[in-house]
Image (tube, rainbow, N blue to C red; front, top):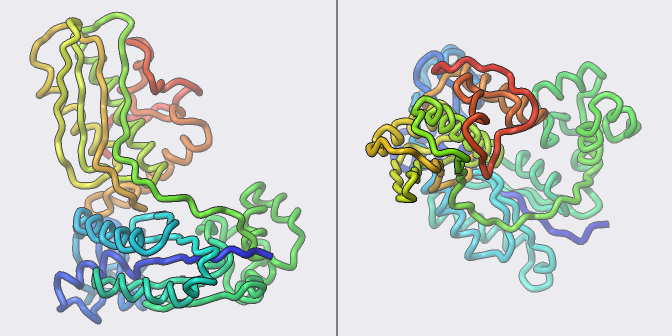
Length: 405
């Protein structure tokens, strides 16, 4: 039996809640946030809108059909990041060990604190303090591990709280849909339903090996979670401030075309690293070192994003402004800073559903076959002009047309 005490906290309809703090007229109204064109995507929606079938990542065109009377808002990623930071500060001042898993979601390890404070009472007090100091509603679940606590939070929403006592994990999970298991997405759910599995109880009763044969390693993880087993620790939160890469050439170059291709590849690779780490950046810096070792850099602030096309365009724009001496170049570099945690993979307030799906597909290929498995066309020739401290080597890349998606 586990003696762990893990709290999961999740801000309720976070983007919507922030907007309602700015405009009380949105209270108790169906609100949908995301890209406003028909090709846009829903980033968040209120519980009032969810009653009509609207949900995150849904095409905005479909959301308008389901809930035509909703209030549609483009959203402000900077404002959401600011409020997320406010909540993080409250948690950091209250507990000794916490993990920020996304812009609106936290895990807190209260193991060993029960004898001094009472973890249920302390969790309630933290919930109320967040509400008082930020104005944001938040729900939480308390149990012996991350999985059960996260599921408990889901059953407590909105603005609720749920404790699952030690030893009751399986009984709590048993009647819930398998969709409630963290990590069971649309495709996995459809596979489980084809096996006749609808409720967690069925998973609990079936042989572990059967899920492995069907889903391989993810099947084992799902089986363990269905039993209420999760040994993952709460990872101490440390906000990474920047992400960068540089390349020093074996032979100094003045080939602007190849320089831009390299910078595009570097910017694309770093953007993938952002998405892989669930990060967004608000500042791009380009660095140039000439053959005489004089070094120059230029940076620009941008709305928070992790989208290739936005970051590549800004990187090339900065290079054009920075490269004025027309001398041989010894080194180039790209850096993303002002990083924040964020579950959004791309800018859902601007980009289309087609673009979202394209990025997801690209990242699936990279996750499976390596960072260099798929590239834009102008990044394919980067190996011919030097060596990098973050090389884009490995499996043969697939060709991705160099177009604005």
